[in-house]
Image (cartoon, rainbow, N blue to C red; front, side):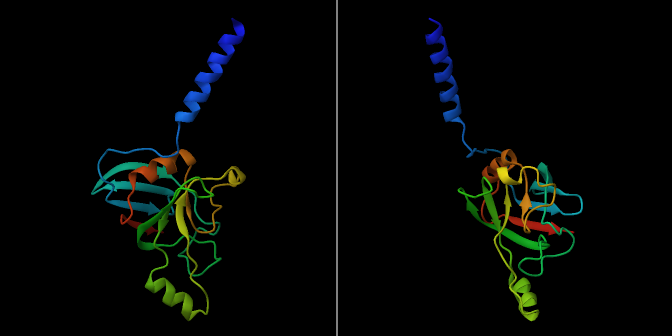
Length: 164
């Protein structure tokens, strides 16, 4: 009888674990804009003038200033759009930001450098679990649970404004 109870509990645990997924659904108001305030380390998902959700964020390892070129460790500043998503990201899940724009490319080129790219809002991999607040190469980091929510709420084409 005791073995039966153990197997029953194990089956329930495996069943519940199998039902959990990193892909969540969202049926609330449309996210019409993402606003990031780098200095405050905050990101807001907006429905017009209403804040739907706010998150504490981590930034690039050199958080002050606009990203000028590949490898500078800065998070871009300016107006972009969410332009892609990666369900198989090394960083749990990620949504892409349309950096670099034409002005970013022009400036980097004038300096003889590449503007870089692959800027995302993403989760935190196990290897960076104790990496401090600003540890990315220029991305915007949130917890894995938060990126699951963001991934469900934010659609491609959503404008994102990143301010100092």
